[in-house]
Image 1 (tube, helix red, strand yellow):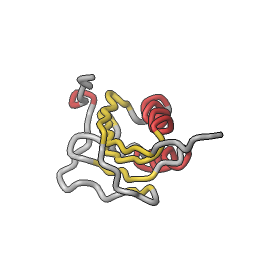
Image 2 (cartoon, helix red, strand yellow; image 1 turned 180 degrees about the vertical axis):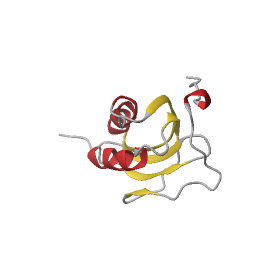
Image 3 (cartoon, one colour; image 1 turned 60 degrees about the vertical axis):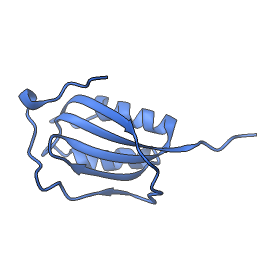
Image 4 (cartoon, one colour; image 1 turned 120 degrees about the vertical axis):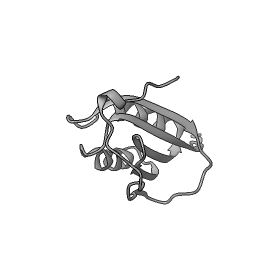
Length: 113
């Protein structure tokens, strides 16, 4: 008998050249391909994503963020943290944070983990 996958949530921050290069539409399509719900937006120093779905699909999604990114993007770091489940029913592209600025290679953050 098959067990239903446990649904989890994660907050993912992507640093590097990820703004102004079609990254949010890429994330939107990628989330759909991995059956994830949540949202994506440009943040103050990168792209912020909240996803809900199976842990295995979130793992595949996070790897694809770095290795399947749009050609103009340069992903320096994908930082993941657990997030509380909110019960998102769709995946949405949100408006950018008011204080966001495009990150450059010199401003790219290095992941601590």
